Image (cartoon, rainbow, N blue to C red; front, side, top):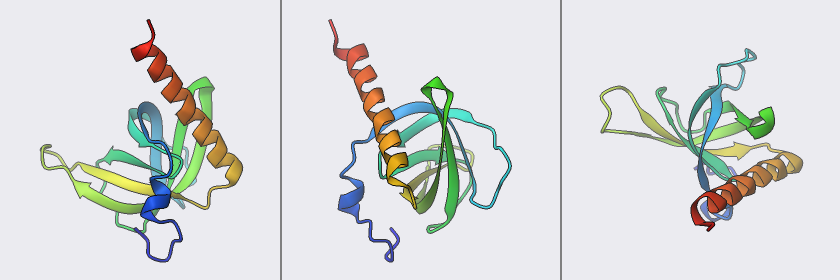
Length: 130
């Protein structure tokens, strides 16, 4: 966690988290090209993400995250890498990236939280309705 960032562990855990399959792309913040969106499992909250990657990023790296939500809505945000854990079970270079959103406008965070709530409702309907 960035020590100069006012966001604390408790703040990040204040948001509901959900695992969801979404098309997404991670790029260097300075990369202006349109990266390829690949569907993958994302642990998503209003505070940040957790995702499996094949690139070894360093703590404090700032990346550009692009996600395509349902209805073809593209969501782009900056994230700061908190930590990257090597996953031993895989034979290729595979890592679990943990990152927090940085510099996100309130209306973008609200949009993100609305989609997370929508995913939660859909999950509950699929798994718990009669």
